[in-house]
Image (cartoon, rainbow, N blue to C red; front, side):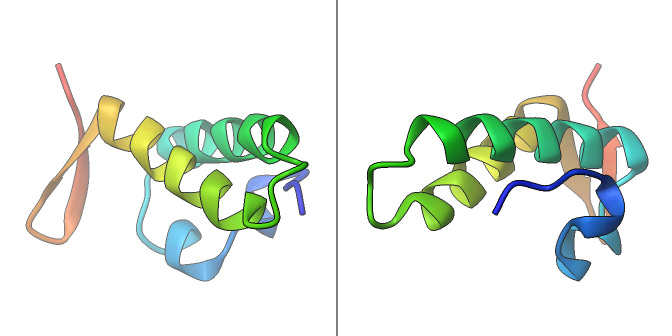
Length: 69
């Protein structure tokens, strides 16, 4: 299901990503969820697309996600 706000994101996303990264995740997930709606595995695909979008802009440093420069 698409997420209407960052508060609706899974706890693993909310508890670990900075707010801007959550915005990226939510936007990418919602777009992919709609794009792959006909695929039976569309929700899992949307999560993978969302994480890939976050990783383009952020990288993990220990337990923290920091913005790429």
